[in-house]
Length: 248
Length: 261
Image (tube, rainbow over all chains, first blue to last red):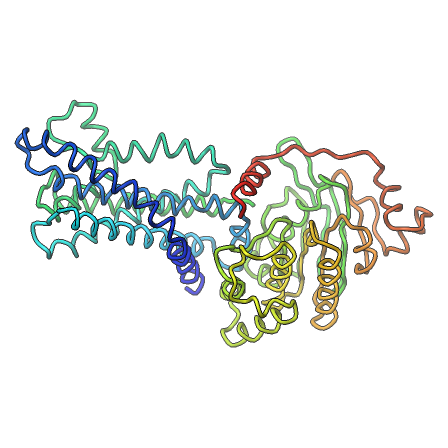
């Protein structure tokens, strides 16, 4: 347990100490929130869908948690580069514990980022239909964080250099975001889009967030939680297996 | 303490380590010398459970690192060729993290951390971030960290690479001191022949994946009828240059330098 705790703490310390990075990583979601929230607002309103800011805010929170957890998970690339990874790999601690500590740390950092964006959303004018919904929304923030931290760890275990990071970013993380229904409603989409959005894990996280926060459900809470839990389990096992295969 | 028999490691159709055997006794300082690409680091990685041997057996303090990895890992410390510190944490935090990973009890952890940081003259910088340390300070911290869990064997893979003579000198003084006081077996690789000559009890020379010869410094000089270990080394391994291909981690390393971390 000591090993899990100290590696979790390390991720947290790294986050808290890099204040510039904290601000920088909030810049992109803020831009999405303000530019899209207010820019597409009038069109959305004319289509009779109500406030776009209300609609998009849960999606932006989901996006922040997605990016943050994948990046923290893949920060392993840096640790591999700067050698710290080896220090943990030769320690008399099971790989599973190291992976667990890192993944939990990444998930915690992602949750903090999600919380900060939620606060920014509230400042920008977002209002949940009930304040009691916010604690419930954290269940979904946690689930998204765990799913994608595990995925980040899995990729961090496999990739050896930064080129791979670019590929993952362009061909995986961005599609996950854009196909998740974070930015648009999933009703009346073309057939292909419907299929793609339904196999995107983030769709269920964003739906859970949007459902709890503004009462707009695409699926049911039970289905969202079931899908997220199942995917989390698969990604955690996959990540642990890939991490155990690292040879320095 | 270390017993290696018929050790082989192949990567695809390239054989990095070809059937080597050697033994290191308890309390001994054993130097592994060889040109670039001779297979030294691959051997250390196999000894320290980071790579699985293709064939052959390794015994560390009676344990097989391939099968009893965790027990074996408790018994050795390692200082890698590349730094393996966490630059975003302080020197003390790096020591503490290591102590927790190696299950050193809290009280002993604090005592030994203080003792070792004082010995390596880092105690007054214990609360500075490691990223602000010079190369020599980082190396000292890594070696101090390697001793934290009182290992029976300490592996040092080119620990003095890029250090000035003062730092090198001081570093070996400390290593020798701990070798004598704590009876730690030391297994080292280096490119500086004078260091090997000065600190090592026994030396093995490796080239193209095989051990060419082993013995004390005096024996090696006698064997090649030379006056210095450097001459003996060149007589045994030839004067041709060895070029290694840069791999992805070398490229990343260059990028890391750009980021100045």
